Image (cartoon, rainbow, N blue to C red; front, top):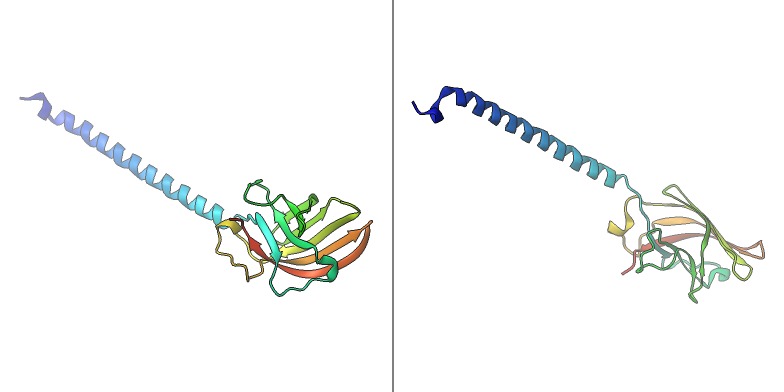
Length: 167
């Protein structure tokens, strides 16, 4: 009798097939759990990196006529301006303190030529802003911007901002 067709080899073959099937099941479960954890992690992630401009139609007090944007650039991307408050003339007031949470966004800036800014507000939307479908008409940030000159409050306004993620 040919040894390749013996019954003793059939048992080993069945055990091998059973182990492969078990391994496939384990791999399938692992992949499913990995994908679901990635999807869950991304859905709860909050990343507002980008620039926030005054919503069109918002008229700030004249003391803020030189104000341009609030820039968050934690990743230091070249396509985004440096982090801080940016003025129309290109001057950037870098952050001295910064707290970026969805329900609590606050900062103070360094003082330049006796002027500094502070902000207290909240983001109106969660998620990863750069990956989202945000337009320049829907506000995503609101709060109170305050301007100080020589340590004294000279202007304060409740403002709404739209998102710009760079080009």
